[in-house]
Length: 386
Image 1 (cartoon, rainbow, N blue to C red):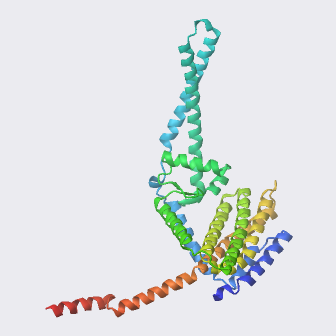
Image 2 (image 1 turned 30 degrees about the vertical axis):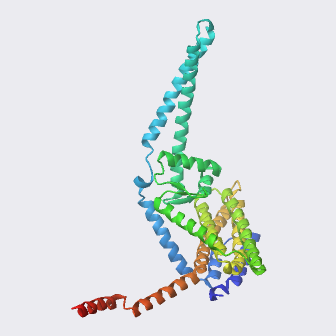
Image 3 (image 1 turned 90 degrees about the horizontal axis):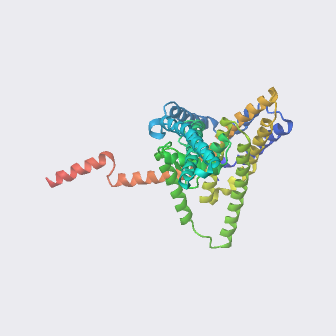
């Protein structure tokens, strides 16, 4: 077991005690500061913060200078068309309705063709008005979606649904319509329909990752012995437990309307999902992961539940506001800790890659195929020919 994993269990217990005391006493003062001190004993938070700052700066740069012409269509002309449909549909429908009413009052002079014509006018007017109003509402939601994404080129559908107060099924159909209309010019929904992706480049990355994961699952050896079956049962137990915690986190996210904290919760959810994917592909990390799931995810759920309870109060006094700010800061710290854990899970892979590269460079050097050696060999070979 790598040295950094030996202290995770004690670290988890310490943080769990800190969170339990805060939740039970409703005193969240210095919660984030205390957790930072505990994590700092075994984790290099400084390096995580630098990594996070780079990501934040990159996101801010994308937000400040977004390539809107390439990624997003203009709604000016479409809005004008929507207004025109709504404005024209009302008088057309009204004209048809008045004509139909007059025809019914003077039924003796009415003809079937006239009645059908007036009914068609009513239907056309209603359709134009409905289409116009629907499109105007859709364009408004489009701008709301863009605001919720904050300049990123991918965003969970759950977060967008929470932002507009609609079911995820509605948002998926809404996004698909916007993609067809060219509002998201490079828009895609991922394979499961859970993520909006607004860039071809980002979508290619998502697809590559999905294909690689499917390939790994196909190539994974089937269990041949009872021990393997038992190991698979342990892996599934941990994954099921983790997925249950994720469901609670999603529920808390739905109950908390704030955009900033919702984005932070979605980031935590995405990182934890990646941890589970790594565990499914590499069952040998499950024992350490299970210990972590016993502390970090329950702790996160406790904090989010406390936040949701305070946020639901009709009056937010200074104590509630201060506690909410402290929990928000703590979630930022936990987000960094989750990132650190995910990075640590790839440590063995990074070491293997480094070792392979070292061996390859040694072999190439022995064959005279690196740098000046390759040039010298070519020169020597030319001289021999002369």
